[in-house]
Amino acid sequence: MTARTVGIIGAGAVGQTVAALLVGEPWCERLLIASRRAESAAGLVTDLDDMAHLARTGTCALACESVAELDQADALVICPRATFTNTATRNVRMAGLAANAPLIADLAHTLIGYGGPVVMVTNPVDVLSRLFATISRASTYGIGSATDTARYRAALAAHHGVPVEAVDGYVIGEHGDGAVICASTTTINGLPCTVPLDDVRAELTARPRRINTGIGRTRHGPAAAVLSALRKLLAQEDGTDVLSVNRAGVWLGIRLHIRAGQPTVHPLELDPHETADLLTARTKLEATYRKINHLEQQGAPACP
Image (cartoon, rainbow, N blue to C red; front, side, top):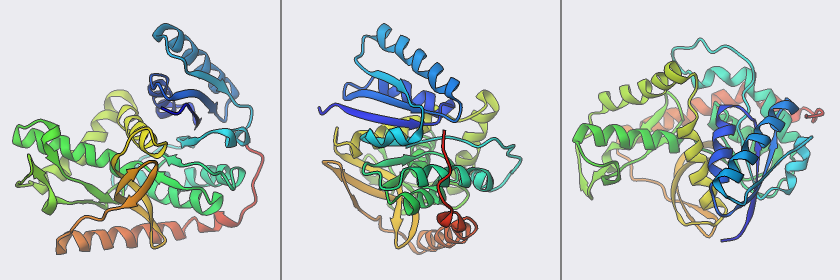
């Protein structure tokens, strides 16, 4: 395995969990942590240092004084969250658009020309992946559909009483209310299966709410999706993932085969209803992006 350096922007719930997972990865030699609050970055680095010593790993964590220092990382994870109160009951992930988009635009302006893969976590993840990629020109991947796919497989496995590993099925399109469940191509143990779409959609909605009610915010699932993407994008392993990428100008979740760090789109066969749902999601994501595309033209402010 080739030793790698990963930069993490954001020392909140997801950033902390991603960092802890990476400390346990033998290929992750160094972590660079940046946060709007220097105290947060320093505190996380100290905690990770304790973890590395106790777990006897070789990962070294360092706090960065500025986001610009992250240009030396082999990959970046973007997971800051602006301060706002989300009271939405529908399109919950879109509710952070106005607050989070300027934050992501500022980071992208600072990191223009960054050459490594960027994994976006901040919601609305599909739209903000596009914003970051457009400004910075970096290869940017959103992890929302990967999380949705994992939840879909878990829900369907529970319904049929089989191990999750037996389920092969995907959720693509928007990470949110416009998610497209690819029921027509889903299999269990390689065979077609029934998919109770209403029940599955209800569980996909209820699952994050259950997490937020219980512990305040989702963190472990998205962090694991980030780790899965990083392993493949940094050529530590080959495999298939569902990530938000550019499809004719709009970033949306799609199945990728990643070999030696290079992703290739492998679109799924969709039935007419799924095709219509994907077009609806695409139209929604394009319309949403138009609300923030003025941020592409703003200059880069001084980032912490």
